[in-house]
Image 1: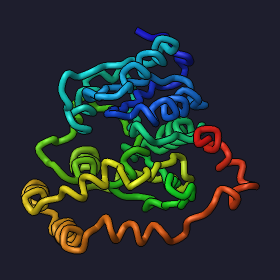
Image 2: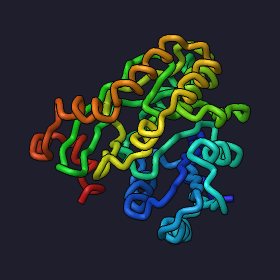
Image 3: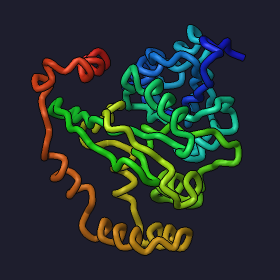
Length: 277
């Protein structure tokens, strides 16, 4: 058992699944360990990586008792991995992070303060910056203020031991979890306006979402509809499949991008720069 840094604050369990993340995971963990909110446990499952991810995780965990590392002899997938970690989590709140993203130092503090003051919401997400590695530019993405959706790696929600991701749903698994499991189709997630996390858009677009979009099948689409009855999402996914969503996303991502020099006088943004050197 790790020793809590501040037992006057509710414990937040930060969950992260890793797979071949050796190039990113040290930076991601640094941003978690540097949070202003200090009562956290960091639970990491390595999904049978073939690179040096697991050794990096273990080396960092040796110096940080609030961090626990687990490894799987087979890849459980991102959501099977999160279910594994949910079973281990002791926190009153659950935070989700992807292995290549970066938390702003104030992220958890601001979200937990919001949830404590606003008990009507089960979860809190945030807006974000996208960081495009290829040309080192940034784009602000605003998320709808109230609803049943958040950018999944920004999400913090109240822990309920019965909450699990439905891994039989192969596409939009996190969207299904937020809307149908966490919120029961009610507007129970609030999204803060501040971009409190940074999402890397990797070289050659090698993000998980990119691969999932590439592999999207009609069976996946109709399976989601069978599980939810969501006709609007059915139409969206059929259009996404037909119109090549990844190609359209590349085009829309060109709009509104900025260079680092555009943030010279932005103290909030500069908190990210230490992680991008």
